[in-house]
Image (cartoon, rainbow over all chains, first blue to last red; front, top):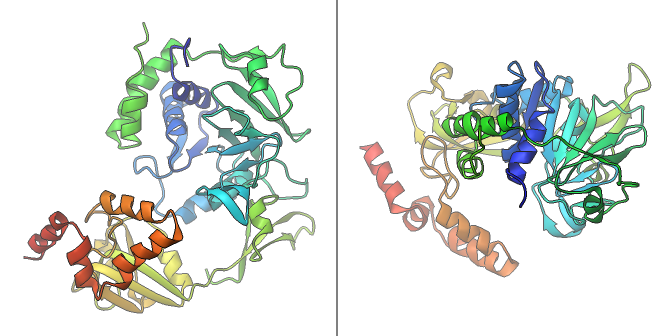
Length: 251
Length: 178
């Protein structure tokens, strides 16, 4: 993004790191490069006692089998989870399965059971999308991989907390069962966010700006986090390319 | 586990639940109020594993952590293909996960049995073959052609190795076997 001293991926990793709480178990799924960087940044910066699970890695995977991870989630011991959705709608439903008619989809995605369970079992889930357009943030998803809201008598340990994109942060309003625009990410404005979002955001004129990544956050992300990812083989190529090539931040 | 069904926290309100008849929403029998999904047990007729080493009794060393013990327990018939047949696989020597022979019905010696995927610790995926597989899977006609060439027209496993496993890999097997 021109006008920013950091990439979209770096911004999202920093915003994700700020959601991690010290002492809590936080996890991200397979092929989740940005959340993996965010988790490691939090651990390096403000959450030294966070327990990290990066599925698909060997360095940050405490379990032998997925059954162990499944039951950790089912017990309600997972504090924070990150998931991406191809489509995300105003009710915080996300779609990671298919586009079009379910019987004759135009595109199929990996889908998966994991997110459909974790969205209800983790205390908080952050949904993210690197593309903020009207085709990714929609009124209603084509297929609900996991639902934002459920009736009150359904056993559920947690649910959606926020939705993050390069342009904005949305907060899930549990009472209304809807996403509300929480902040915009400079230099984007509320108007630009509304124009690129497929559902109504109400009055966006007075929305606040999210604090930008600090020098310290970016230095750690491009330094220690990048090194740790490369050395442990945790999305090493991605870290080398994404966190290494950005312009250096002045001290 | 052997139980007929298991409760699951999750999936309520998903489109997946609407399309599956093996998952239902039920009331907690103890509190009489809370509802959650119960999933019917999966009992596969046959499970197939490809592993690094197995012995004639069916004890298996699968050199990576996995859920294969769970899958083997659930399945009525378990067939294991192995890179190597060894005299004896003991639990303490197994890499990653150990599958006791009591669950295994058939052991087959099949070097490169994971090709064109990889076998951890033995060989990686074959990217050239994989790219061709992805290309041919774009439509039914080209995929049928792929299956004919790579599966149906191949008389046996030796012929498969000869035709499709890269020579550099196949050569390594010879060295390892010496």
